[in-house]
Image (cartoon, rainbow, N blue to C red; front, side, top):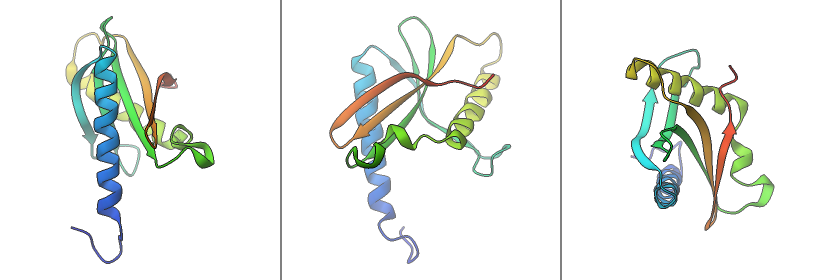
Length: 132
């Protein structure tokens, strides 16, 4: 439901969902396997908690936490430029929660991004790190 204060929110959400679906297909074509989609942590050190758009398993067993960003075009820096330090911190926090829930020894992990600028899809392996 769109409220009076959020014009176009449904359209923005739909565009983001479509970009995420496009990114998923792209990664699966590269041999990655979906583990989980839209993993969310409601509370934590960040007011907004954290979310991971896609959690994938690479061919070598690496667990890949993927942030998907979408822009209609690559003007003004494009989609990849919108992954702020605070966004990275929220993704890292959510990944830590996911790994804790797995228990045991965690597998090798990395943080990737998929930038969707219009129809162009760019997979950025190891786009950022956990800061540890």
